[in-house]
Image (tube, rainbow, N blue to C red; front, top):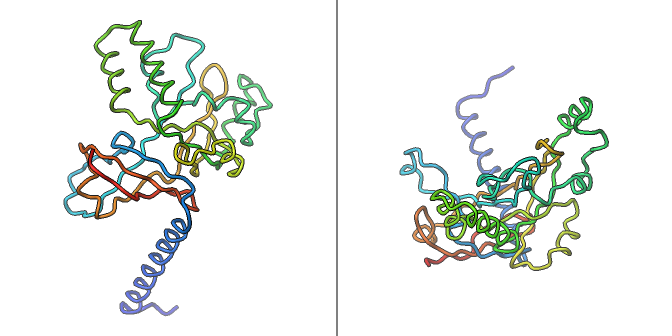
Length: 258
């Protein structure tokens, strides 16, 4: 077998880089073609910047991830605590019940407390789905109301702080549904300025008093265009518009200081 010369290897590498960039740029152009599938207005509350390791000065790029959350299913076998009420981006969503899991294609025929049933659940792979994100809607208001009721019963400094964070800092972007049919979901959530649909996946989990599931949104990382570098960043207050394209991938269209 004849080995490639250094020059041939260099040329092959350059060709691969050009081809990869062409595919990426072509996909982005296709995603942004035509009218957006949805548009959402976010603020710094919905943006999560990566932890800084000290190498950022060498990188002129800027990116952040959408901070999405779920309205968690509250425990039925104990009293709810602050952790249960904070509506973090993980845990079993309230809407992801047994009926919904079966609708998404999971086999729940065997009882969860049966050994064979537990093994069957563990073997079932996550399902690719479409997920619905709601911006500053009923899910956020429900999360806030939960914390307000809890704070009314528990007058502790920690509870007061968490309530203030929920009012002023925490993301208002919630995953509120999932399905296998994009058109059906859009028909159920027609407001394209409040609801966006993205790709995601759902996995099973046993959360103690019944079968639940985890939901994950795919493609939440956004690159910040150079023209917005002076607006979007850590510790900055801003408003920005997101557009969601043909491939259900978001990108920034406008940004301004607030």
